[in-house]
Image 1 (tube, rainbow, N blue to C red):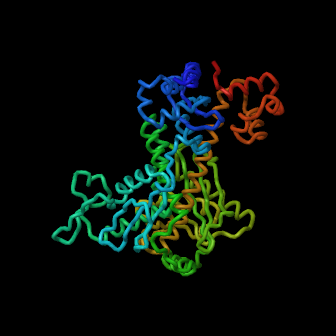
Image 2 (image 1 turned 135 degrees about the horizontal axis):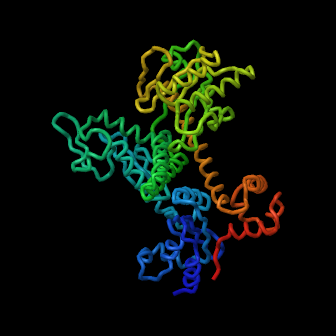
Image 3 (image 1 turned 180 degrees about the vertical axis):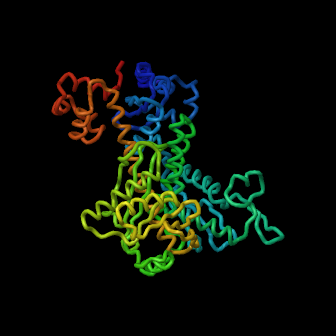
Length: 493
């Protein structure tokens, strides 16, 4: 057995038995693997118990173990924090053994032949000039296959191995076994209805449909809080697979033809559909984001001429209450936004959109009434049926999914949703960082804030020497020395 394995076994024996995250490094100090553990000592020790242990049955892990020369750990207060911190550190370090690496010859494409009666989503390795649509290439074959498997459940599409059957009534029976019930939509369908499924699936691959990805991330957080860590980890891996699929695809492909209607025509059509007095050239949209009532935040995005005006985006922390109440949160942020515009004498948007149904619209309307601004055009876009909800006695408006006016509203709403969730994720990441320093005795809020102000983030604090730590107000040599060793919990035998 190599000497490094013996040495790492000794290191592992001295680790804490608390929950946390461990980083394995090679002889150059590069992080090659990040993992989480309910019990750090027990989990890390399992890697170095010899060839008879189960973990050596996997050649990839066996090769990794022989490269390890250093182990560092981050203790957390619970497994939820460990799960979230693990994902963050994987994104930060991009360790080679957390990723399935392949060379250029192994890159895969997704091929969809829209000319066939029932287009299928197939994997291939070469792009041909055959009129089909190609998505990719994707470097991570395993993640791509997972994505397609989940897309089949989500959209009810056919993959390469399906054997659809033509029925006497002209419809198609897509799947021929018991698995049919787990896929979206009816098993017996027309070519026209199936075409809509394909369009939705292609739109997803193009990166326009992000709602499902956000739903997975929200469900992951809920599962983690409910202590269902196995399912949470699965959802995390799946959401990362989907995110990478979208990101990679947006770089390389062009799929279904876009509707190239001039934005001014779309805006005029939206004006007509919503019965607005003016063309909605400036649209502002609000969304609320939280995780089981915690980290409640809101976003506002601004579109001008049908395009994002990112300088006009705004983020809000909820200040008037603590807990889970989307309606109160919506009322607060709408009030804060337009009270400020009124006080500064600035122009109001041509249309205000809120993500949600009648409850959210009513809450936003209350804010306008309290500010004596009831003339501002306001609607809600209810996600489940994609219907437009009005604040007056008009019936809900349901537009065709192909309507450019609806698609503009969806882009605005989806951007607000993305921006809110990004803010929420940033706050959670910040909390994880702070929680590590919370466990260090003698470091109060003032000193912790001073550290963050000087160094910017936890990783830079960890890289600082004792002398640099002493430069922070309130931190003397003894405290700096203890803090340095606390942040470098790499036990030496």
